[in-house]
Length: 213
Image (cartoon, rainbow, N blue to C red; front, top):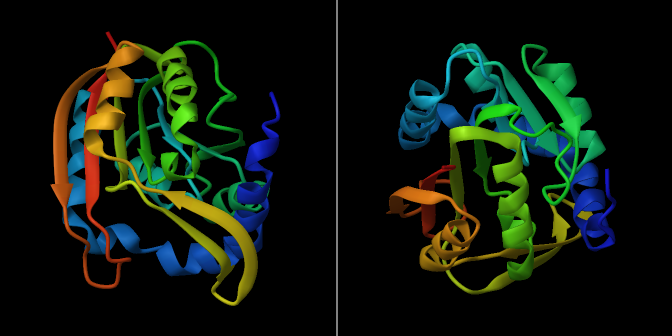
């Protein structure tokens, strides 16, 4: 797997907070009916018998939810500590360490993919190669479900839950992300926005559903 030095600080930061992150977000989907509905939509449109990739899976709670609902699921994350937590807590899913710009997966391996708040750690110039990688690993007609924060700002954290970190969170305009998806050949089939839920960081969030031709 190619090593992307610019992502080292993100990797180290998530390694540092992995255990706290896992406890904080373990039951996140229980309070997010819209997310569950969108994941169900993805499940229903995934070619039977093909695995779903959870890209930037963190401690694996989304991958685990998909596995609990009948999907073969492969969680991929930059952070070795996050991958270790996923393997320990969610044995029904498979987990791999990997970068969004060099996914550890075969061409056409996945029937669909989900990426909830993982592209927010990419530079805008990295979206295209990341989406090209997703396209490479998806089967024809495979779907990608994205979620990200809306805007143009960059929020930096040097402290997170009492831990020292060095990580940027990039916000994107939905039209920009959709445009990059279309440039690499995806057809964007759904765009949706919502405000934050109680207890979430106060941002607007976008969801895009895109299909590989």
